[in-house]
Length: 294
Image: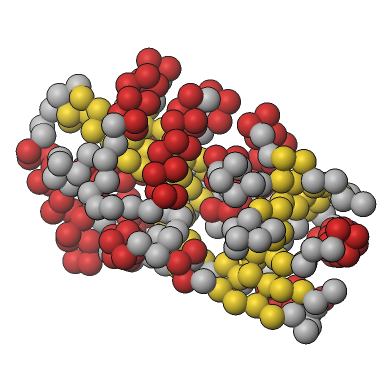
């Protein structure tokens, strides 16, 4: 019988090993997202025959991710036993379109749906790094104006000495409009990541103007994809977000092994959706919820 264990920060390397061995381009398959949001989504994991599966409450009720490892079918069989023994529905969540056919073949009578609010925005690295062409003129204009207004800007890799200032910046971060509770809880998650920055072992950069922190980004590379997990900037500085995004990519996506950039979901926020669409994603990664009758 499967035994689910609560995800902790100490599990980071265990989880990372599975994601790196079986990479996918969706943010739910990144170590940072899984561990950062472990308490908010009540993330647990179980292993069986070189395969890992997670339980979460993405949908408001317990659901399970698509198994990752060498024995996907065997893990699904074990999950059936677990759900029957515990009297809970067998619901799979965050199943991408490449995995969907295998589930439908194994469970032909299941129902499935995908929520647009949770689609990932995937971009070709070269396109949003160079910002070449007419369709990126808005982003280029913002960046050029930022450089003109704030010629004394800098972007540097985060060091231990930056952490206290970044925590203060995050604690004092204000939204440009009223946000829901999850957005505010995200700030607490950002602080937890900063407080344990060495343990997370991710990639981060800080944007300054005249020595003052006005933004920072933190992410990681898995397979051929750079995941941008945290992006916070002071919008009182014109073009701060565009400058931060471009600087982060120049610093961490320059390696030829990186082909794509995942900037995660918009969670139904219309302003965020407009912003992310303006960078012209090469794909919106659909994530399916599948209800399996036992």
